[in-house]
Image: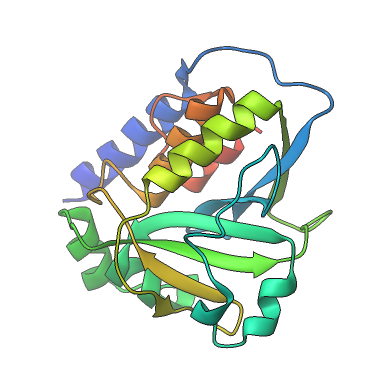
Length: 203
């Protein structure tokens, strides 16, 4: 079992080091987004309205425990397995049974969406600048991950969970989703990014 775990981590680090994507250049000026990393989950922070794109039809103030937080101009969006995402807001909440259940595969996946101000200078927030076309591609990828269904209360007053598309596994983790979203936008990224570090080392 230990060898399997070590082999998985080694394979993940190798996959994260292999460059993939379009290889297109990122602009010096453009639309700012951020990649956030809390040590377990990575997600993408982006403005609510930019380049003619928004999530107003998918994410509503009434979904929040305190709708006043919807007044913030930015969204933090991540994808992941429902039980693992809802049950592990911090490392202290991680349980082996939860990890095993998620790693073996689950169709119960969610989008985690938080409303927040722009995270300028915050720890764990990595700035990325995109062209309008790259930003539209990123938004298209994220929107395609949402599915029909009711929202679920989040960790606090400013976030909520939404039904998502896809299947979570040890191969397709929340961090692999983040890497795929960034590759879709043209951001240089590893071929397989199962861990937070395999995403953030490219930023």
